[in-house]
Length: 241
Image 1: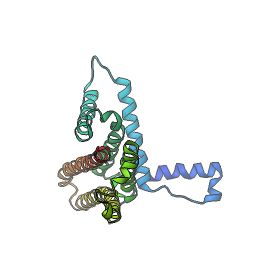
Image 2: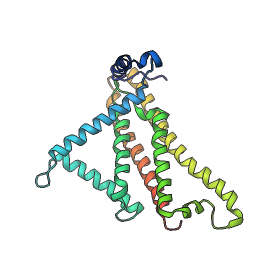
Image 3: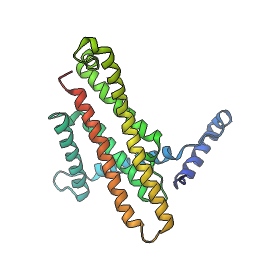
Image 4: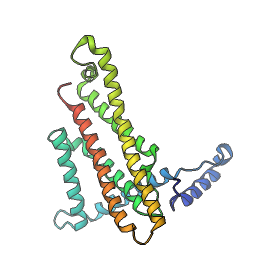
């Protein structure tokens, strides 16, 4: 099923074409269309930036509002998850990445509840980009933490099985980013497709239950992505290396 473009697709591409023409790049590059998943990813980033700036303006230690308390609870929950998986105090280092994943993926998934928006995470370019960031980050952490000892982790404890185990470990670790990207894409693409079909058939009766289901799916897929990334970081940090 082919999804229609979001309402931001036309305006953003119009602005982009204008910028290319003003800078003279249009004559050199021709017409370059900004894909809708990129447009919606930018929209999600803008919304998150506005929320963060708004929160920073109203934040108060003495008299916190409901908006602030809600986000403080979210942050504390993320901190607790990271500390429980990786180790006490680990959230100081990894909260920015895990938090960015959590808020971006959830809001991107949440876009599927509105018929005039498209879902960035229903495109493999978006989900694999997120998976690659997770993959390279936890391997970087392993190398930074253990040096060459992290590489020896791929060789196993038995030297004469090292060549075979190295291949197995490389395949296993590459399967992680493939699984992260495909799982998020498959679930969000399927949920968005099913919602679109039912909305077109019975637009008056089905939307509310589907919105509740879509919200649950958005939350679950966000949690799966961040918990797996946290587990991978914990594995890279483990002293057994």
